[in-house]
Amino acid sequence: MDQQKQSTPSQAAPAASKAVISPQLIAMVCVIISFIAGILNSRNLISKETLAYLGTPEFQTVVGSILLAGAGVWGLIKNRPHGIIKSAADLPQVDAVITKAKTADEIPAENVVGSLREAAKLPGVPVS
Image 1 (cartoon, one colour):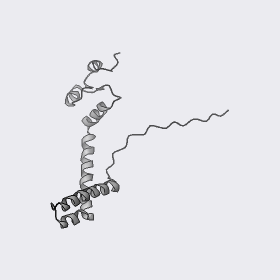
Image 2: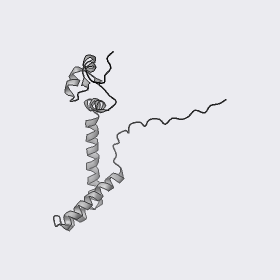
Image 3: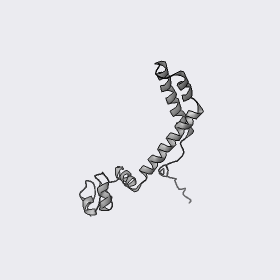
Image 4: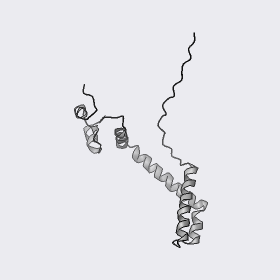
C-alpha cells in the first residue's frame, strides 16, 4: 500500500538583501514627497516651480539613486562580521553567542560572550 507523503511547508529562507530598489517603493516615496511639497506650496513655503520640479522623472531618478545608495550602505554595515553576530544575538531563539573574547568585548550585547564559562552564567543557557 502506497502512502502519500504529506508535504510539509518548508520554512521560508531569509530574504536575501537586494541591491535594487523596487519601482513601487520609488513611486511611493515620490508620491509622499509630492504630497508634502503640495502642503508646503499651499502655505507659500516653496514656489510653484519647485513644486513642478518635484514631480519630474529627473527628481525621481535622484530619489531612487539616494535610496539605492542608502540600501547599499545599510547592507554593508549590517553584513560586516560584528553586525552578523549582533543580529544573531538579537534573535529570540538565541540564548548566547560564543565568540572570541576580543570580539565579545566589542559587541554591546549581554548574550555575546567570549567563553563557555561566561555563557553558562546567562539565564536560559543549559549547563552541561
